[in-house]
Length: 210
Image (tube, rainbow, N blue to C red; front, side, top):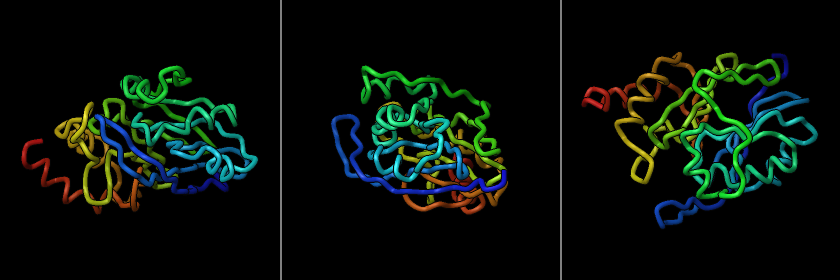
């Protein structure tokens, strides 16, 4: 575990779904040490991500879900580094909207453990924002890489195709609020938060029957 750390960069591009397109800034998370790393959500700019990796071996490109803004740079980054692109199978229909001719290299499954730099990253399937949405929990780093499942201020958006609000609230209730309160949530967009910070707001939705 010595030397393992979390690095962060922000990349900019567009998000497109259901006929609309919006400008977005995405968080890209790199977990590793001086020799190897995992990238969570290869968004928009493969060159910038590769530069941030330097000469380190990239073990995997993990997609928290398959909205285009989180996966658009994944094939190019894979080609540059030789790393496999990993995605939960339930998000393949969304993936194919962006990359119809290039499948992911492997599937993520609930409970699967990825290891990098001595750190274990446990896959938590958290559908709602997308059917195959996942989070990665790294207790040794007191960290959750949440994609668009949980933000500072509440759940991820569920107003578009393949999403469902009661489902995302259930995922957060059952999979995330059970984590230690000091767990830092590294989000897909915007600022980080903690489980303890978000729990009171989320409890309001749970109490309403979701």
